[in-house]
Image (tube, rainbow, N blue to C red; front, side, top):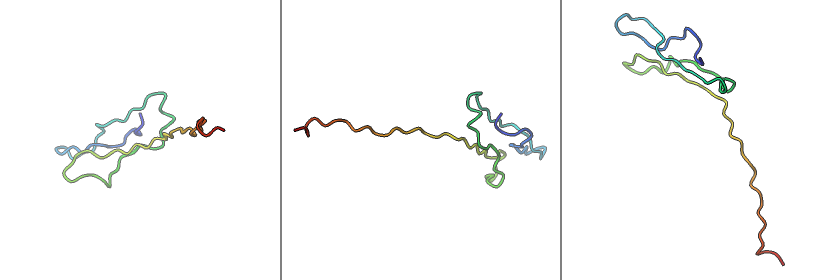
Length: 76
């Protein structure tokens, strides 16, 4: 589970209570990529009952240097 336990994500319109309906899962091999996972209470939309969840992962893209290819047309 990426979202910390007990974090409310859903506001029930009838009971007026917060609950946790939404979950955020990570696979075993991806859990070391997790930087942060939390709800954004300040960004709750108008007339919505769910909170947005922000998940931040460390996913660096490996880049390779472009190799110079020999240009045989420039040979003497």
